[in-house]
Image (cartoon, rainbow, N blue to C red; front, side):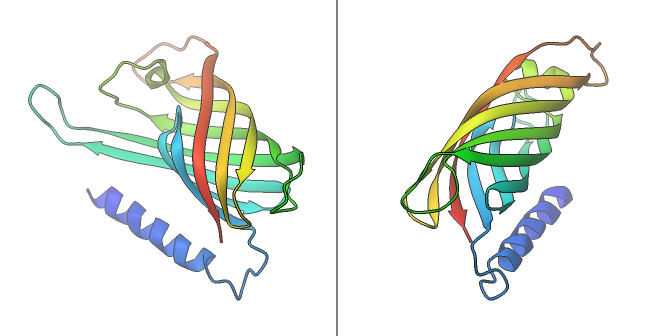
Length: 172
């Protein structure tokens, strides 16, 4: 419980700092929430224009209930995004992008997913941004998940798994 409180406070502090328009008038910060694999329900923070750096966070705590034990899921990754093509009437940033991410995953899902077997992975993706205005839009991306190490109790075996996400973003 203490970990989730600290994580929530850190996220709120980052939002407050990033939304200070006097310090960053160009709107180069992006915050988004979405769904993806393997990062599940996620929060992303990005900085930049045509080349962005960012992070993706996911945390979920399951309370013990009936036959299910208490468990938690955690994902943290660093990402680099290159917007390379396409035009939008709302922004100068290209609408197509390449994304590369390296992440740590601790997944104790109740459903048996293949991503649970790995704790570190790399995911290259290609994506598209739909800008509804200068400040808001959607990101869609698809690619691969390449596991780099197995969870401690499972022997490592290399697999190529699908990867992707969809997220609603706000530029600050």
